[in-house]
Length: 193
Image 1 (cartoon, rainbow, N blue to C red):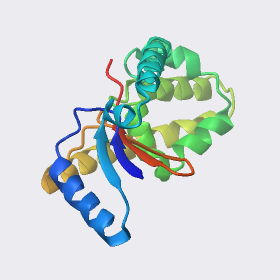
Image 2: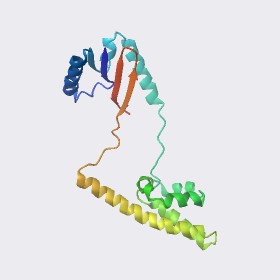
Image 3: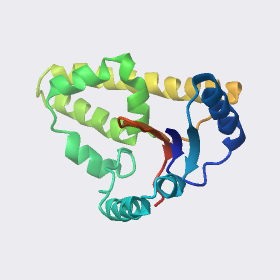
Image 4: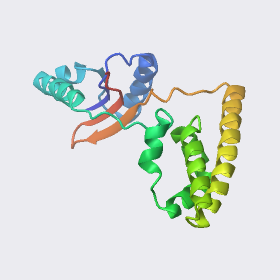
């Protein structure tokens, strides 16, 4: 016996497709296969108490999810600047000299406000004779700001031209749970907040 299982019973958009595919597999392999949503799997197995336990666990889990850290350093640029300005110059040199990180920098510094504060800081440190590394960091920061400004506009243009702008908040998780006589595929669970 096998189940193709969606924990979220609202994911029935492709039910007809899955039903047809499961029927083909049942016929081809001589297996009893079921398509299940929500508590239906546990009703079929006469284990509804497990469904109740899952729901209780998910409720408890939802209440214990920590707040995600803020990744937009430009939301409060002065506070972000104060937190990161004393990182070692080597960290900045590696971060600002690597074009492969431009996409990440666009996410961390979308308006480049904190980067501009860092740039001013590097200029000031160089003018105060704190070391020539700050001149290098200033140059790297200017180049990086220019590079990620171009990266951001090219990326948006590409996404607009292709007609594909993805909603990153729609994430779907897949997990396969195998047991000796039952295979269950959990597809598309997204906890609601």
